[in-house]
Image (cartoon, rainbow, N blue to C red; front, side, top):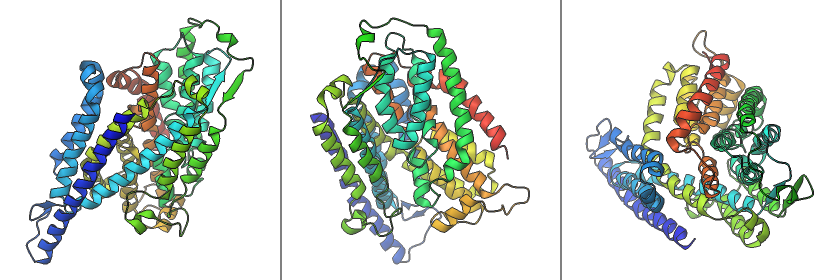
Length: 494
């Protein structure tokens, strides 16, 4: 625990040293422009507007190391992944601080997103860790299928992170002695990703869309049939695989765990979960006139994040110790997510900017099909929230709308007729982008933060969990891609 906070402090020292450097570089660039020096297409006296393509290399290296580290150099990766993630992120941060004309803004914006991200993830992780759910029934296809369906619905109420952390341990417990890699994979598919596709609470891209102006219940009314068919098909495939496992080895004394079918210990932690969910909406974009610490104090976090960190501390200090012990709670899963996503958030800045520029300049040429597949494929390896925003902005540009206007976003969701003959209205584009951003997050372990947390918790329980590459070629490609292709063919083949 001590080293976790020391390393976190190291990252923030880097961030707050680089940011002033970025400010100086940006100030220098503005002085050059004011002095009347010539301006190139993409540079002002060495200060760039768009990053060079080679600045994507740190992100590619990090992605490759996440995929290969646990397989080929496990000892090194286990002990040094925080240094690797922070080091690669620092390369991009220093480049932006010195050479990008908007470096200060980009770094501050990314830091603000990261703090918001880790506040939500950590608070949900800690609060749910104090809730021990005991299910007397032994794991079998019908029970597991019902639990996964319940988890998919719960993900829309308390988010994919909250649902994943609440259910992964009891899910593994009732299947002890018969757990296979596919059990963890389908849990990630359904509870950690696709399940959260019905509400803005469920998954970050949808929440960002809500903040921009997409009506809260729009996604539910538009996607429920796609969501339901996808969830049912995946549970059906899972139950076929699960039936082949058989009863497995029943743990000694399993039936004597509890006299009731369901028992919950540490229920008071649900109170903390409720506070966290309410805090999600404490944003000036949701509540008009709500105070913004960013504007008042010029800090990269708001009241929402302060509340979430405070709740995380209170939840940990007041948690039912027996429940924490029963969950085998420790900070390793959140530590891994915190450090790896430091690197991911920082190194993906150039990739997102290049993608955003490409989407903006080529939006007119993009069909619904292209928006669907590009949003989806990139959401599997990049943070799906900014990917969603980039392609939403691009699709709105195609219709002559501005993502910065709440009314324009609402009109876009309501359906603007296309300016191109025989094209579909705007709401189809929004639906394609929304579905792809959420569903394709299940394609890799880095597609969504709960994926990594579930993987880590399962590994600590000595469960056989597929590696990064195995997860993709053995499960994502043969199971998800055909299903997503059918969704495209039926709903977005335009």
